[in-house]
Length: 72
Image: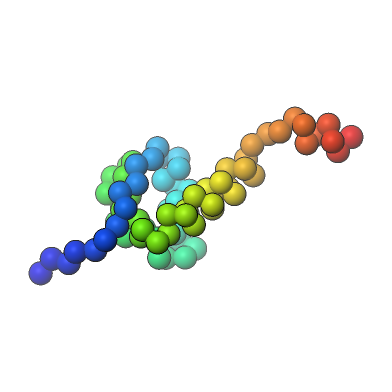
């Protein structure tokens, strides 16, 4: 018997999908279904959490030359 679940269809590139999968690996409550390389079905109540975690992870990987000047 089929089960219906409410979710948000999320389209992203494979690198962002990998980050979301990593976030879900730690919590196990975000991704409802991995559809293909660029699409995920996610829990609607977790969308804001996904955005904030992605911003946090991506900001760690950004080079800011102004920070380097401030530390000198």
